[in-house]
Amino acid sequence: MQSRGRMTAYLAISVALGMMLSYVEALLPVFFGVPGMKPGLSNILVVFLLYTFGWKAALGVNITRIILSGILFGNPFSIIYSLAGALSSFAVMILLKRFSFFSLYGVSMAGGVFHNIGQIAVAMLLVENYRIILYLPPLLISGCFTGFLVGLISAGLLIRIGNIVYD
Image (cartoon, rainbow, N blue to C red):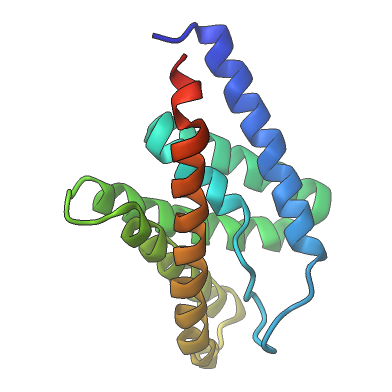
């Protein structure tokens, strides 16, 4: 069992790492001409934490990272969109992780897809333009692809350093 101080240190480092990944991602240009299509680098951290520390720690780190990154690198709307995507993604990942027939890759891919669905749903409400849904097909494809890559990297991290977390 871990000491409370050690757990707090791991989670604080995770928030800092997540913010760095968010910053790096904010510097990347928009690919494929579709606004919002990004690789989801900080989701590597979320999936890793979900499988090592559990859903409460992963959710806390993710929400903290989104709010702090939004304040430092974004604006109130970026916080709203990020939270909408993150919460819908996270709810689906927690649900699917409970079923043994979903691998880490499947959980991560579903998270990528539902992140985009959550953001599009909020965009439709805020902008009051339902034609935004036309962005959804390419975003769903990219969500599958980036979700798989996030799962692949997360699985590698779990194999290489996941057991260190429990020492």
